Length: 150
Image (cartoon, rainbow, N blue to C red; front, side, top):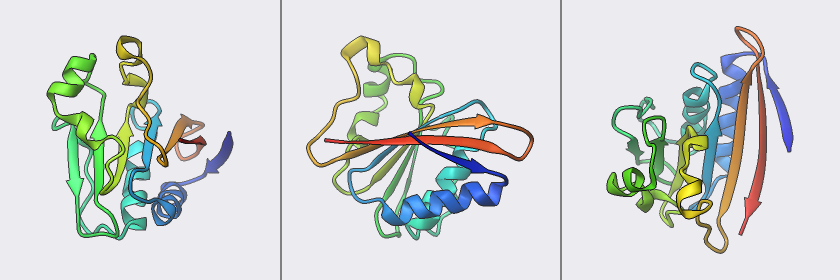
């Protein structure tokens, strides 16, 4: 597990930019952390790293935002209000997992209903970056992450 200390919103965005520049089709970023931890801020950085020009907003009520026009499409999912695998599938969110055309970022990854049908499916050659954000104080965050490849 890698640990990064962000001392500002700019640090968090810069980390996201770095990740976006290295990301490729089929990558999944799974973000966890409390409300206000900076998950969407990190996604904004990933979008910038992918050269997405659209304004990134939290998809809490729409569940997913699609951003195109960058190096790869960005699919931004929020699982905060998703409680079951049936809800996940009926919302059509499963189509964004390991999308061969783009990069997927999932906020509230800890809401993934793993107990119902097992862990998130994996596909050969794809990467999942699991990210946990902890609030240290008003400005600082501990961002811990690890990759798993299939």
